[in-house]
Length: 357
Image 1 (tube, rainbow, N blue to C red):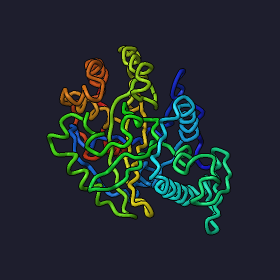
Image 2 (image 1 turned 180 degrees about the horizontal axis):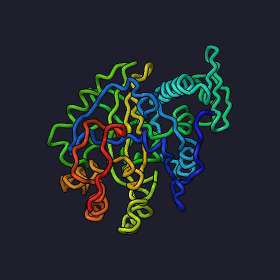
Image 3 (image 1 turned 45 degrees about the horizontal axis):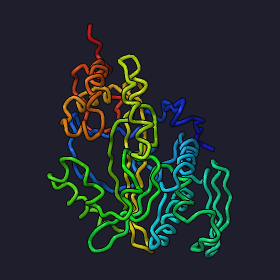
Image 4 (image 1 turned 120 degrees about the vertical axis):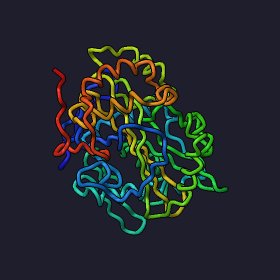
């Protein structure tokens, strides 16, 4: 296998780590030195070789450990995966999309063999070799959506489209940034986005909905979203807030570089062929402040973004109380030099940090 998979945890002892390779390809979300909500959609048609945008469903060194963590979340709370009865066909659509994509994009890791409706799926990293009948639920150990999303990094919301609206009618959600599938299931697009400040007044969600309703099969889209997490914790759900919320109080000036993580979601959107549903994968990437600071451009820019972020957004994203400590740390890595446009680290052209004397 071409990818070396980490043996790591996203809870308890938090042994999660990023290799140098993973840091360099981290999807840094800020293309300039300031941030405000925008629709920020673009076509999902690959990207620079080796980047998280290159494949349809990125597989990286965290794959095996993330799937182990998902199984633990589902064992504790099966309601993190739900599908309303009319969404079964969409589940089969999603299964096909992920299996075809992974087998074509990572042929050394995944194989899909199809003879009519008789399919064989081989997942080498997880040691899975299953034969089943496509569209026959009785031939799989779980429903089709749950079966395949237990083997795919990130969360998956499957949205039914009707009455010129999108409805959250199915999903596998175990790595979310403080929202609940069990609460949102059956809601429409505006209802589940209701808690987001400022964006409604700016008309962001009306424009986003219009864009999403018009996504065509074979023309997926993508965007980035971000927040902050203390410790590399994947499961920051409201159901478990009593476990992770308190961890925000454990930051100190000495440990903030290691404990404070930028949490970035690569959100993609695919139209499904049989059901006409829209699948909304939300892939979570984590990177500690100290790892981000190894990229001079990101160190400079992150300080400026966090410093100038409107108070409402810092509050909504959950780090308003820790912002002064974050800025004290980040300011060491901002020497005031200009940054190049775009999200990539630009290691060949970005000047090194000019240390103050």
